Image (cartoon, rainbow, N blue to C red):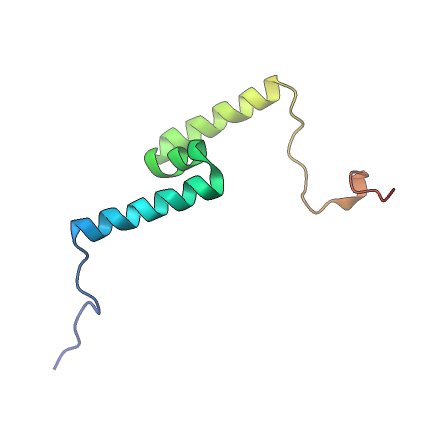
Length: 80
């Protein structure tokens, strides 16, 4: 006797839609509406273009380049 290929039955369209709704709600709460749209609604090419645009805009507006999050020698966490 062969083991079944799937342990659970396939999800119905309704169940899958509910899962996507839960996933979207989580992304909106965790990252905001804009990043939820980027993460869930855009293709990989669109995401990469959007992120490049975001980086260019930040650079034009004087946002400093990314720094190491664990670099504590820069003085930003100096004790009073």
